[in-house]
Image 1 (cartoon, rainbow, N blue to C red):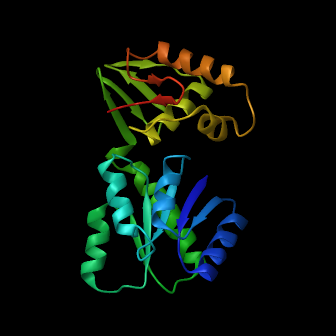
Image 2: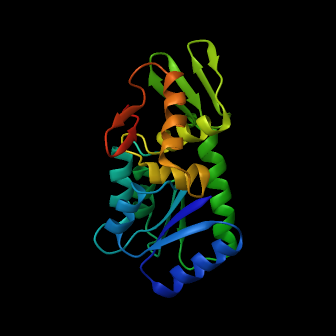
Length: 217
């Protein structure tokens, strides 16, 4: 599971990265909001941990832009602000949780577990594509009308990468990193994607020649 951490205080960022890595997460750390925003469109993240006051693009602004792009990734804000208006703004932006500094790293671990669980339990776990087609992210079940479409494990993982990056082009490199985790021939990735596309109505997964694949909804 991969986490994006946006925190401009160096010592705190390193402490969080080391702690989360030790308990089994993969962590990409950033101190600049724009760099973090760009990274979200280059890799697949399971959860975002965002400091509010960072250079270039604040945590609030970053998450607001993601939600406007229909990026549904669970997010936790880190902040030293304590006034209720700031807390309210964070939740209105679309975060799952809010942690005030200073905090224990063990508390952060619990908050991450809770955010991931609650995010999968809400309605966002059911993704609709039109054509009476829907995918349940929690159960890994694809249905067309009342009929279930059976997917192989690799096809399911490819579809979930596309869903997590909805409205953004996913490159073969991103599929390789997130599904296989090691080098595979690009032709193998294309074959698997074509197999998946054959099971879906036309144009659900679109090919952007030379760039990758996208679900636009």
